[in-house]
Amino acid sequence: MELGITPSALSHAIRNLESRLGVRLLNRTSRTVSLTDAGARLASRLDIGFQEIGDALEDMNKHRDSPVGRLRLNVLSDGARLVLAKLLPPFLQRYPDVEVEVAVDDRVVDILAAGFDAGIRFGGTIPEDFVAVPLGPELRWVAVASPRYLNRRVSPKVPEDLRSHTCIQIRTGQGTIYRWEFKKDDDYRVIEVPGQLCVNETTLGIEMALAGLGVMYCLQDRIAAHVERGELQVVLGDWSPIEPAFHMYYPDRRRMPPGLREMIDTFRDSSEI
Image (cartoon, rainbow, N blue to C red; front, side, top):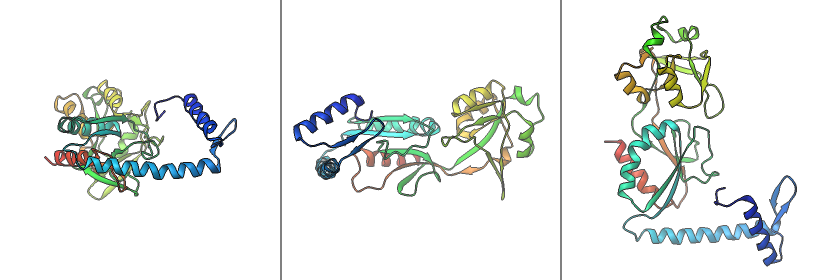
């Protein structure tokens, strides 16, 4: 659980609190748990108190030479490999008193409800009520396959040719199978590709492409080294679309947790180098 304790321990603690107060705080059934009126009023008053405590601690942090605290990030797997692997080390070295927990997850997550301080997603996919900061340049998406696979097939000339190829399908964080996007000048096409294999993360898809199992669609930066070594070849290169950069996003709130502003500034400065 978010609090680091089991549901039974939490339930026991609340029952002890109810016993000490002489007031029932929760309505319990076999299926649901909800606040009583008294519990709701207590939670509302406590929320104000916790806000005051948080503001006081934040005020103390302003007097520190360096922030102290813990940050929780929710990051796409591509963002973890291409952004955090490069930008996180200098931040951790610069701010040794800030602890960082990273959850790598391609599912769509409500970071506020899940208790994360910030997240990293593709630009254009971030809810409007969050603040978003771009990290690095725009991203190029490519279709790739191994020479072994291409030696057995006629290389595609237009996106529709992929319908006669074996493709490695991708299941997105929303649970749908991704339709590959291609763009050449003003010509934009979306292709529903066939395939024997479907994966939900890029690394395995790339490994399967290296094994000669089919055409894979991913960020160019994820396979650049393989292309340079000749292990993979870009197909339909003149149809590769350019999409928005990775963005770091966080709730639009008055008080930011210690270290988050410094992380955003460090990431933004490092990505501009």
